[in-house]
Amino acid sequence: MIPALIFFVMASYNQKAKVRSMKKQHLPQKICQHCQRPYTWRKKWEKVWLEVRFCSTACSTAARRNRKQSPQ
Ligand SMILES: [Zn+2]
Image 1 (cartoon, protein in one colour):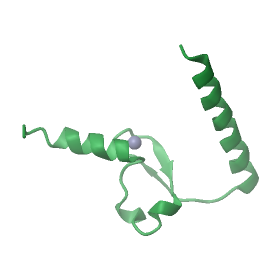
Image 2 (image 1 turned 45 degrees about the vertical axis):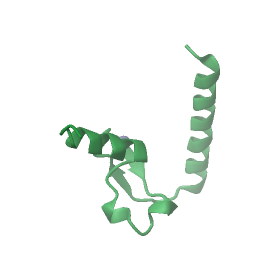
Image 3 (image 1 turned 90 degrees about the horizontal axis):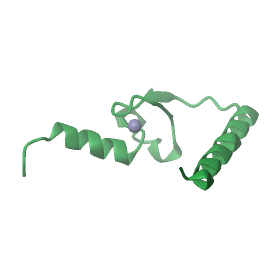
């Protein structure tokens, strides 16, 4: 639908794949409890990695909303 956007996503994906294969870092991974996708350790999580359960703030917000279904 938006070819420019698709191209950008694919290009950045290719770049990431290249960097990953070159560096071959072994970072821990987890499965997001909301979207069920694997996500990799990030610097910003170094102190809270054990508590991290979602790949992004969007997922954590969505999961929180799903739980709290009481109107308020
Ligand atoms: Zn997620």
